Amino acid sequence: MQPSTADFQFDRAGRHPTVYLSGDLDTSNAKTMASAVLDHTNPDDERVWIDMSTTHFCDSTGFAQLVRLHHHVDEGGGRLVIYNPTAPVQRVIDLCDPEHVLAVRTG
Image (tube, rainbow, N blue to C red; front, top):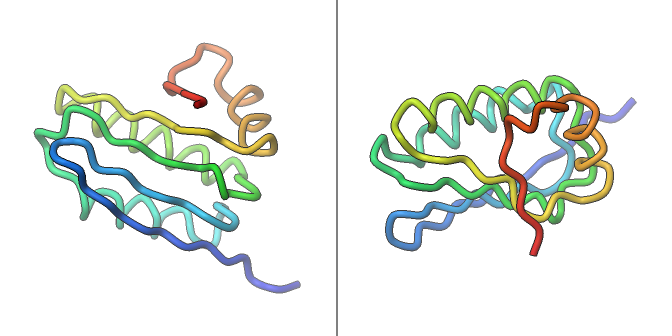
């Protein structure tokens, strides 16, 4: 079994950082992704965008880290937005987030 691969790119446009996640978000890299996002965001960020338009797969560990990030951003008064999740990622969100804790935007 080959290890999964993921790439995390960061862009900051004013007070709205965007994280571009591509590849697979799973148990092998989800904590690394979350730590990298925390390193690239500020407590006063009003919004943190996570672009998942090229994320092929997300498992429950990846989802748990997205929720962790949501709570972290929310505690600072901001909002985490999952942007353009692929169909497989949206399926995980639909299954794991029936209360719609995560903000998802397509666009």
